[in-house]
Image: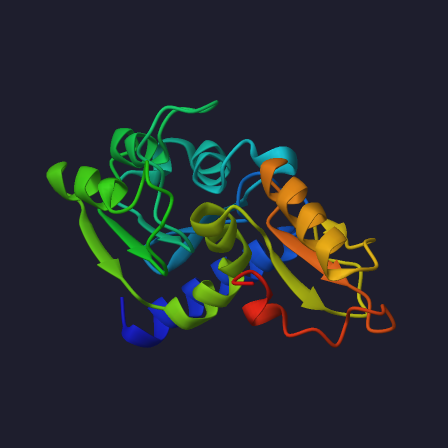
Length: 207
């Protein structure tokens, strides 16, 4: 697999993830592409409500053919038992030979554990390809994980967001964002014509 091939397949995984934004809360939208012998075996993306995860969707579609494949994943595979088994374990069970990860997960129950589990099983792991794009993709999820509040963006488009801000004062907005965070929402939209659209939302959470 060449570097150009890697970039192309990761680009597809990122596109799959972007297309699912706004539909997967409380989980982040993840894309996964399985490739073997220069051919795409299967693709997957996080489904509504966050389950099943992208890796599971792709692995189920590929079946036994996933053995020896390379998995391109936009976010580090989970390593903990939540409402679904760990995706790292699913990749190990499928006997993939390599996993390319765009972005490490900052969720405390993952945070490097997925990579460690894969490497302990003898699977080659590469990280950072598409990392800048993935970091932007997961800014809302990371914000919620680290601050308890989702990311908020001024945007005329409705697509790709978990909710739209309705509060009309900064104090009400902070309360609303906190409630969105507690509900597991990662990306909140504020309309350009909204009275609070001019607020510097990059620093608002520090106030």
